[in-house]
Image (cartoon, rainbow, N blue to C red; front, side, top):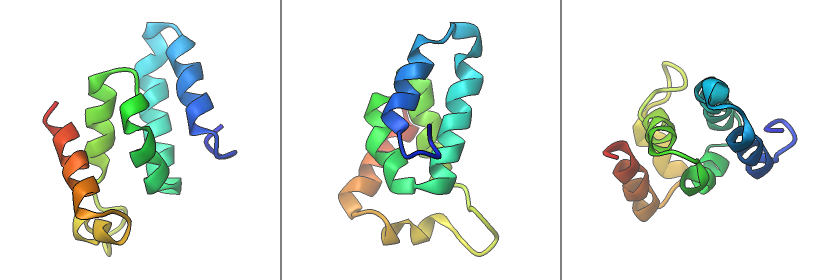
Length: 92
């Protein structure tokens, strides 16, 4: 679903899965979204069903995608206010 640009449907599906597989599922969704569309991941932060997934997603913005990229480049994608919101999820 992520490959089809349907992150909301992917999150809804994940919420319906048994709890025993949700951690693996949501971590995979977060990873795919971060790698494919960082703005889409930001847009669904509030919709992730548990705080731990919101925190995990926010922490991705601290990790370099490659040795050439750092968090400092996030300003290319987000406003200062949006970066503050991402930062607030890290402390949940």
